[in-house]
Amino acid sequence: MPWIKTTPYEDAGPELRNVYGAIYALYPADYAVPVASLVRPDGGSDSIVAAHSLVPEAMRHMMSGLAVMMQPHLPLTRRQHEMIAAVVSVQNQCFY
Image (cartoon, rainbow, N blue to C red; front, side):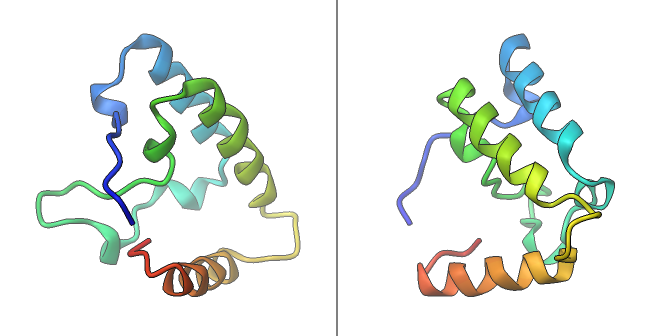
């Protein structure tokens, strides 16, 4: 996967921070806990959300849709979401 310039939450301006906050508020609470195997030695992590940070309105719409599909009352569990993501990542030869 090519390197994409991102703006992580901690470096974002007020407008982008609001978009991050609106998206993260839609995710189930257990998604706020980082997956240990994805945390880099420097403490950071690659974020599919941050990969969309250059176009905040696109990020808001796309990632909000994904967050809604991960709600706990729907049939798939977090483990199933992670399994699907892992299989797709392998197929795409992508770390995450």
